[in-house]
Length: 377
Ligand SMILES: [Zn+2]
Image (cartoon, rainbow, N blue to C red; front, side):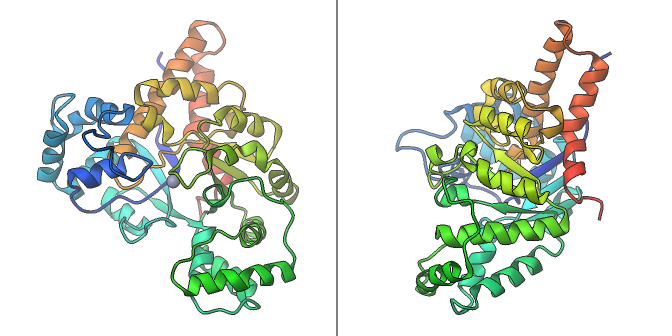
């Protein structure tokens, strides 16, 4: 009896799709976390991610494997964005999508738009720093910032199932884990609000981000939902050496004391550290997310490292798909392939049974996410 690997996935971290036809240059920027063009004379298709798209996605566009990139994009354009998006996401076998709305929201579909486009139930995850930036552009005074931010975050998260922080992108995890005082927040807000008023600013003040995390911690405690942390792999804003999640241990301890769950997203190349943290902190969960897409043919190695130590009850699935529908499909395909490869070997070696393997798949594919996110309300 084979393992039941095709369970509907709860994707606990993904983004909206681009609802229009993508020209080659735009498509290539979206299949690199750099979000910039490949060096002159080269292509992002000549990377593990480009190879796996041509290998595994062509069939869904009715093409043979390994089409020329131009032929691939021409077929995509002929079918149209709506059809392409629907085909890939539906073929991923998803039960529910938890959509992060905090990044380039004007370019991609909202959670409601995603539900309409795919027919899959969608929930929202609200990005803490994006709310702070909105408040920063509202004309609020330094003295009024803390109140305005707390109100705005509670309002933005009214129907959300989680909050997310990108402090990893804006300085990293080596911050003072204590909550800043009211006076410290006001003092930091003054110069930051001036920069925001000039139109140049973004949330990059560590005192205000620490404040944001503590406000978020209180809100997530009250709402019984997790805080997601971007960890590791991302664009060049992510200072990778300061993204090691072990730097977050003291703050994770505070969250644990409060009874708040933390979900560590992506984690590469720190998936082993994330697995360790998931083992030693009752409130820590993690996934390996989009790195499965970016490592393509090598992705089973990374999921294998994630499976080394962490309890099966602490791992989650995410595609971290952004913009292009291929990433929803590939994320699911590569996750299932890697998980099946490892579990089949465990079974062959007598470390697991099909029955136990089915339980492990169910936990990571959907049960763990359903346990820690308020998905039924
Ligand atoms: Zn993401």
